[in-house]
Amino acid sequence: MDLPMKQQSSTRKSTTKTSSNLRKHWSRQKFQLEDVKMEEATRSFKAFVMQAWHVLEPYTKFVDGIHIDAICEHLQAVTEGRIDNLIINVPPGHAKSLTTAVFWPAWAWIDHPETRWLFSSYREQLAVRDSLKCRRLIESEWYQQRWGFRFQLRADQNQKHQFENDETGYRVVVPMFAGTGERGDYVVVDDPHSVNQAASDTERTKAVEWWNGSMSTRLNDPAKGHMVVIQQRLHESDLSGDLLTRGGYEHLYLPAEFEPERRYRTSIGWEDPRTTAGELLWPQRMDQAELARRKTSLGSYRYAGQYQQRPAPAGGGIFNSWWWRYWKPKYMDLPPVRVRMADGKLMTIMPVNLPEDFDQEIQSWDMAFKDLASNDYVAGGIWAKKRADRFLMDQVRERLGFPATLEAVERMSKKWPKARLKLVEDKANGPAVIQSLRHKVPGLVAVNPAGGKIARAQACSAEVESGNVYLPHPAIAPWVEAFVEECSSFPNGRHDDQVDQMTQALLRLAAQVPAKSTLPPPSMPSGPRSWMV
Image (cartoon, rainbow, N blue to C red):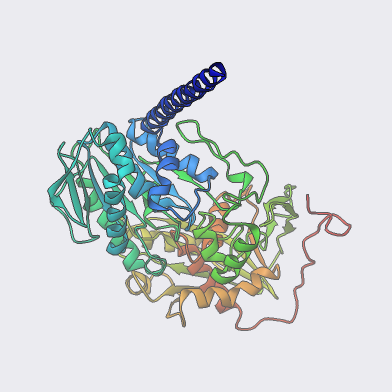
């Protein structure tokens, strides 16, 4: 009778001991797993973002994406010194601020708490918001349990705009245009322009000059420091556009819808993994239906900049690149001009023979201001009219000082003697040019254009769309490609001098227009849409 009782007691003790051992084993495994995850987050910025996400976004599930991979990979490359300066262009609503202004400095301080960071934004409240989030992450139990032994925030410098740690590192919000006496190892601006500011030449230029003139001097060590700009594209001459022209920055741009013709590879070997035109950047959050709604609400120009990182719609907006027609000398046998349309297809445009005579020929000039190299080009075009058709015969486009501008007008007038009427916009150097040449070159007429630049362009766009405006074949006039590009990106392009001289001429030539063209439409292969390849 006693034996079963002893066996029962022994079994109970054995079970208890086994359960205790399992708990210890599981506990050790759990700690080991946490150690592995902590080490992974220490070494990989992407792993850190994924693990830290719940601290700041407890009710929003982390959703991975191509852009998260790309941004993390390039910011880690900056931290490791493999990239000096970086521009990131990414659509709004893609966690760019959280990744760059919040997670990044908190992660970098794990191994380098001595680094110093300066952050700015067009709206100071946004920069302060991210400063608070970064501080909250560092002070969180999750962060402190893992890396609290490496540094601590100083109580006497722990504010919304600025906080420091006990290893001499700090994170400071620098208001745009206010200036600062602080210097940093990392100087970052997240959204240097608002949408409305980017539309203003004055405000846009102000932001560009602030970055280039003030913030670019705030690095502790220019040889080792890093500057990072992250924004959505808003204009060809926004801060990203200006810096890309100057050089010295790695460029990571991430369009919401993939465009194969814009595929590229960055210096660290990253390449967009998408392969199909229109493939989405973050389909789990921004699906096709949502992007379609945003296209409708924003319009083609704003969508192209903010979501496609291209400040003008593919092919153009007011002037689409496939609207232009081309002429060639009758004696020359030139190939068709191939133009890519917005849907990615190629359109083949057959050039027409240039008419032997014209109803009228005129010059049209857009002058620059003074002799400053930062001004727009001087642009002068020779335009000819044959009933309803318009032909750009020749063009001068250069950065010219005042004496060189006078010489260019004289040379063009000698080269094209039938272009007796010479339209000169009554702005910039225009009045001075007329005054200087009035007794040497006849036919100079000052033009004070009515309405704004966009209104004038829109008034001319129908002629271009209908196929009545002809440009020289690019084989005989290589500058035509730049002309088309400027027209396509207008009004968000870097320059508009060629657009201005064109609209000035077309509006003048439109004063008396016969009912229809004497030229046949551009010849194309027969068959329904058979010229599309």
